[in-house]
Every structure is written in structure tokens, then in C-alpha cells.
Length: 452
Ligand SMILES: Nc1ncnc2c1ncn2[C@@H]1O[C@H](COP(=O)(O)OP(=O)(O)OP(=O)(O)O)[C@@H](O)[C@H]1O
Ligand SMILES: [Mg+2]
Image 1 (cartoon, rainbow, N blue to C red):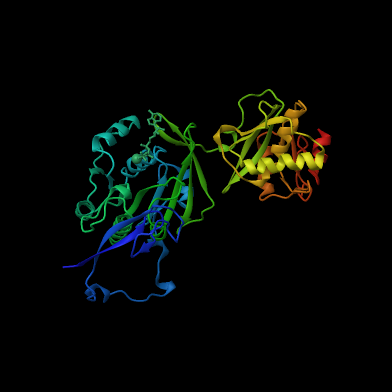
Image 2: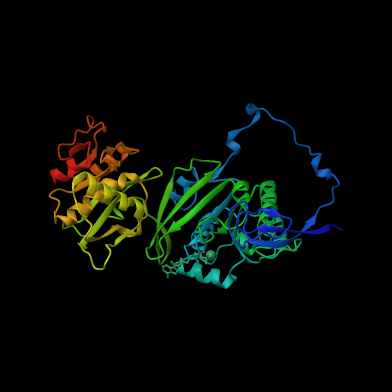
């Protein structure tokens, strides 16, 4: 009979304490310690520790055994490093309602054409899954797509061992419980233990597995940090509540780089990849207007053209307002201060609103010049004569600093037909031979302001 002891465990970070503490000493969260019953294993050495395994040399390992399975979407494959690696363990995390179950059902549907797929839902009934499948136009006559609505880990693992699927989807890890543990569903010990047991079965049987993970109010994966350590790949599903686009990025990948992002659009028939996200966030309005300029955002290996809009108006209240959507408000305040000190503008009697169009968010310094230009353009009612892009970080002395991946940014702007690109002075423009493209290199912010 295993010994029962209790421990106070922080539900945010998994910190363990013998007694209750109001503030977690590890992550600093308040009132997150919960008492959990822990069953201690007998200290006897398990016979399984004496295994038949042995050391091997690199030359004895055949890479052709590392098989990858392509998904329904090349964008998704690119973030996985070229498809799902056989036997890999993937964690898909995202906010409620972002579309995790939708994309997993699409993946399950596609893979079931060539593999045996088990889809375990611990949060919904099989009828709810069927409803979603009907919305996604999934053929309900698929023998290789097995559904199970269950949250008892033992039952799930028994059925997995019996059915031996090639691919397993578990939605979600927080809703599954291990009956051998006393602690409640979703607690740190439950999540940790369930993930470890699933991992063991899936690695043993070479089952590629995706588990869904909830995120907490800070946007981090809920539960113990160890969850992110034990999985091979962590995919974050992000998006804006009021916009249809979604982004998946890998924050950890043992089988590929973490530089890739995939853009999707949530449609009636599910998530559809956007192959060219560059144009997604550009205004559909073709008429040039004051207070609107273009810039570039680099996200992984992709370059996106973004539009920054500013509205400068007479002060409406006793103090002037500074409102920023999608951009760091402190960055905007800093740019306003630089414009006032280094270029002689006075915004002390003006409200300023700045918006990154399309629900995008970015804190990239490369957007500084575009923010400054939008504000000045609205203040002076300047309508840009040419389709221009502004790229550059503004330093506190008003100098324009170089930004990362400038060649990719220029290439993308040229591809989309922009006529003028304003870049930092250090940029090498000798290789740009496009006669329709005017390249302007600047050292100080006032240079561009006085030119326009
Ligand atoms: N008919 C529809 N057309 C377009 N989008 C839809 C439609 N029905 C649902 N959606 C979208 O799908 C989302 C729900 O997707 P899904 O259930 O896959 O999310 P989830 O991340 O699994 O949520 P949870 O965390 O609650 O499990 C909704 O928030 C909505 O954006
Ligand atoms: Mg779901």
C-alpha cells in the first residue's frame, strides 16, 4: 500500500512547499498554493530498470527510420520542420475558443486517409465533435478515425493499447485525470503525471501524439513548467478575438527550428492557411490618406507589410490622451517625446491615437519610423505622394538605427509594388536595381520629416 502524504503546490509554476504560503516564492503569484495528496511509491527498485537497452554509435543509427508524415497543410508542416515526426509528442496551447479543437479535427480527418487516428475528447461529447465535423464537411464514413469521449487516463491508455493507433489526439490534458492520484482534475500533479504516463505509452508504441494545453490569464501554458520540458514540440495558437486570422508558432521544436510561423483564417469550413500573409493587414482603401503609413514586421521567416495609422486632434479633456492599439504605448510615448525634443513639434495640446491595422500586435523597434511619420503626417495633413514604406528604429537622440533582416523587408516591399522605401543610412542599397523603386537612406528623424 503506497504512503499518502500531502504537499502545497503552486498551480502556476508547480513550486512545492510543506506548508501553505500566501505568495509563491518561485513565481510570485498570490493565493495559488493548493494542497494536493501525493501517493509515494515504494522505494523498491523496479525490475524494469535492468533493461535490454544498450549504448549505440552514431553510425549504427539509420536516419531513414525517422519518418515524417505530412499534414493537410504545407504551412503547418513548415512549423513542424517538415511534417509530424513519427512518435513525437506535441503540445498545442491556445486561449479558449481560438480554434484548437477545429484544427485538430482537420488534422485528424486528413491523416485518417493514410493512418489510424484516435481522437480523444475529454471536454466535449462525441456528438459535439460530430457537429464540428459536419461544419468542416468531414466525411463521416471514415473507418480510420476513431472517436472517444473520456477523461479517465487509465481507460484512455487501455483503449489506446488495444486499438494501437498511429496518431493520437488528446483534447485537453487539463481535463484528463489519473484515478490513482488523489488530487483534483487539472491540478499540477494530475497534469504532470498524466502527461508523463501518456508520453511513456506513446514513445513505447511509436504513436505520434498531440495534446491540447490551456493557457492561463497571462497567456502562458497552464500547469507545471515540466509539461513544456517533456514534450518534443510546443505550438502556440494565437489570434485576436475580433479578427479571423490566427497564427501558430513553435516555441520549442526538437525536430526543427522555431523560426517559422503559419497564418490561418478561421472560415465556416475551418482553418484555412494564408500562403501570402503580407497583404492581409494592408488597408483595402487605395486612396492615400494623411496619418497612414506602411512598414514591415518580421515574424519568424515571414515578412508582413503592416499599416500604421495615427489620428492627432485637439485635446478633448483637461489632459491630453495617448491611445495605442497593437503597439506598445510606452514606445509611442517615447517617439512623441523624440519628435517634440529633436524635431520641434509640440503635441502638448493634442490627443494622439495610434493603431496597427488588422488587429496585429507588434513591439518591433523597426516600426518606430512609421509611427513617427503617421503622427507627423496627420498633424500636418500631409498626403503621401508615393506608395511609401518607412523602416527604422529611432534612438533617443533622433538617430535612425538599423533593424534586423532589412534585405527581406526591402524585397517584400518591392514585390508588392511600393514605390519608395525609407531605410536607415547603414543599409546597403547597391544591389537594388529596380528603376521604379526610390530608396531613401536617412541618418536622423528630422531628415525624413523635412523631406516630406
Ligand atoms: N460557423 C462558424 N464559422 C466560422 N467560425 C466558427 C464557426 N463556428 C465556430 N467558429 C469559430 O471556432 C471557434 C471555436 O473553435 P474550437 O472549439 O476549435 O476552439 P477551442 O480552441 O478548441 O476552444 P476551447 O478552448 O473552448 O476548447 C469559435 O470561437 C469561432 O471563432
Ligand atoms: Mg476545444
